[in-house]
Amino acid sequence: MKIRNMTRAVPVCLLLAGIAITPAQAKVSAEEAAQLGLTGTPLTPVGATRAGNADGTIPAWTGGITEYPEGYTPGGWYVDPFASDEILFTITADNYKQYADKLTPGTQALFERYPDTMKMNIYPTRRSASFPDAYYQGSIANASNTEFVGSDNPTLAERSVKRETYKPGVWFPIPKTAGEALWNHTYFYWGKSFNAASYGMNVFADGSYADHQKIDRWLMPWAMDDSEIPDDKYFQRGGGALWCGSQEDVYPPRTAGQMFGGCNTWTQNDFDAYLYIPGQRRVRKAPEIGFYDSPGSGSDGLRTADQRFLWAITGGEEWYEFSELKKAEYYVPYNSYKMAQPGVTFDDLARPGHINPEYKRYELHRMWVVEGRTRPQFRHLSPHRLVYSDEDTWAATNADMYDAQDKMWRVSESYNINFYDHKLNYFWGDAHMDIISGRYACVNSFYNIGIKDGNGPPVFNGKPAWDHQKPSGLRKYGVR
Image (tube, rainbow, N blue to C red; front, side, top):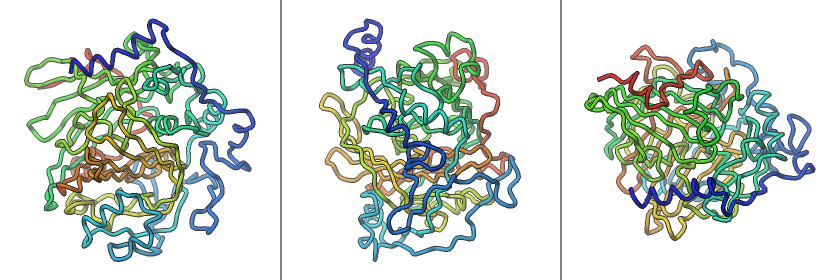
């Protein structure tokens, strides 16, 4: 921990002392920004290519889901808008090499590891992504305005954004670097706040599993107007709160009542977390939560903290050097509404090695590809990794992590849907698969598992529970 704290101190000192800070020009010219628009422009407001691909297997974006599907009631479970779509074809271990140019290396590794059970049902591509009008407007404005604070230190150059240059929207809708793309992905739009009873499982190699429940309370001040953020010194530190999260364990019994909360700030992406421990009835600072390759909460060591959203910016410095930003077509999990239907259980989903493929839907989409390798001065459990972010949402669908011998190790999938009552895209569930041990972890989500507890879908943009993010609030709400 002493070494980690030393590396954390660098950006704070530089910012306070004003040493070696230089502007980082992330904004684009007015001519480039003019490519963005809601209609009639080459790029959509979030920076996706509006047109379909040359062979017609990816259609043009026409606005995504803008009306509720028949049978949907706001606040209820999400009706599948594409339930009548038929499978176009199925990729199996027998034919996957025919499609290798459109399969991530991790997906190919799953076919090699599980030749008898791994398969991909390919459906028509539905560009279903849609967002609020204000988000579109903010994204267009950001293209020619948003800038990083910048630094001569390459680990800090793309680590914080000048708050006055940004409006709630996609940060860099016409990205020039992989760092900009990773920022867009880490802070993709999933509302201003989020409350949910969430369910996860850790699956053993034989397909049996241990499940858990948590209560998630998340706040996204970066997506809010200043008037929506409390006038509280805690949330004004470091240039203001950027992202805040709190999580409370419900079961298993050994962790029930444990709760953490904390925030990132505009000048520091290091999650300032605090943990309430029921048995001790006290709150302590918890620097390990949300820190790079520390174990992800509830994952039994099968997921690192920075594997949330498949690869999220964590910590005060950028540990990775990035390859050139790329964009390519891949078959990826998409519109995973079948997995989100009431009545689906973990018994239905858990299978040896991977989620039951009958509940997955794969489509062909264009993806931003970020690839990174650790800088010489840092150490991470995965020195080489990739993440694949959907051009229409900036949410990731796939990620690959290699081990210290540069062999494929962990393969991740995210099962995203359009929460069309709020016009946002978020994951219904995910799977982080260790292809060496055969085990995998699913982040607490899978909200339909909660029917047995009387719980419902996530609540977006509800009344924020700000106090849960503060040490004083954890003491107040913590129970033994």
